[in-house]
Amino acid sequence: MSNLNSSALARRVGAWSGVGTMAAFVLLWGGSAIVTRAALDHGSASAVLLARYGIALFVLLAMCARRGRWGAPVGSRMRIVWAGLVMVAGYSVCYFESMARGITPGMLAIVLGVQPVLTLLLQERRFNAMRLCGLLLALAGLAMVVWQGVMQTRLDVLGLWFAMAALACITLGAIMQKRIQQEPMDVLPLQFAVMVGVCLLFTQVQPLRWENTVGFWLPVVFLGVVTSVVAQLLLYRLIRRGNLVNVTSLFYLVPAVTAALDFLVLGNALSALALLGMCCILAGVVAVHRR
Image 1 (cartoon, rainbow, N blue to C red):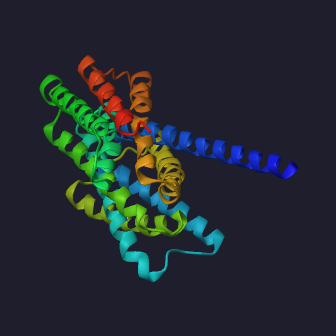
Image 2 (cartoon, helix red, strand yellow):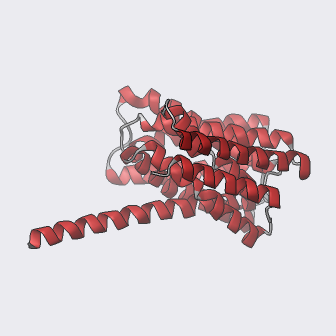
Image 3 (cartoon, helix red, strand yellow):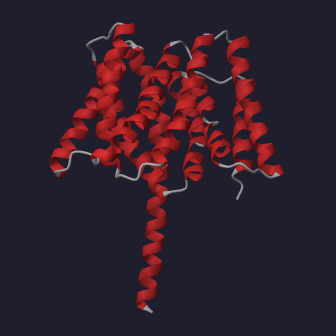
């Protein structure tokens, strides 16, 4: 009897631990957009990216030195590099450029909230009527948000294209990352080293510009340590251990968190059409994943 009780307790603790991990990831990932906006107010996208991933790489290398292991086996490194180029480098550059061109954190989060639907579309080939309706509803919501951005608020069209490119990168990158079976701590140092190289190339296109103030360094350190190390390790651990479609479904919670923080912290209220679009995306994702 005691064995049964201890087994039930262990399952319950494991379940609550999983919920805590997912909640922590959603809060950190959703809040990082607000911190990114604060950093970009004091420096160029190239400067923020280089400082962020330089700090993150330093922290990861220190963690590797402490654990006495430095990376993945030689045979898997090319797959890790390619996944990093798409999921870390491509996503980060497009994400930062879209926000630097005037896309608000709330609107960008709504666009990225379509990721679970795209993941399902790419991972599964057959759909029932409910899932098809959910896909169409989510895409209709995305169309509303894009229309609002272009026609109503006159946002930079190139900024919206960068937002769509970020969506493509995070979706394809998550699929590529799922095929890598190594521990996240064996993967991230190599991917972040590649990212620092990409940032150095990016500085040739966009010159470095930053203010040597707390307003720049505080959000950059947060992005480097909390978002790039803590949240990224949580995401990779969830991707490695769980069903990819279910894990990416967490991203439909991110727009609500980001939009709320965007309004409370930065005062950027979403318009009625953008809110309707977000509701359509949420309803579509719920319909797709209703089981």
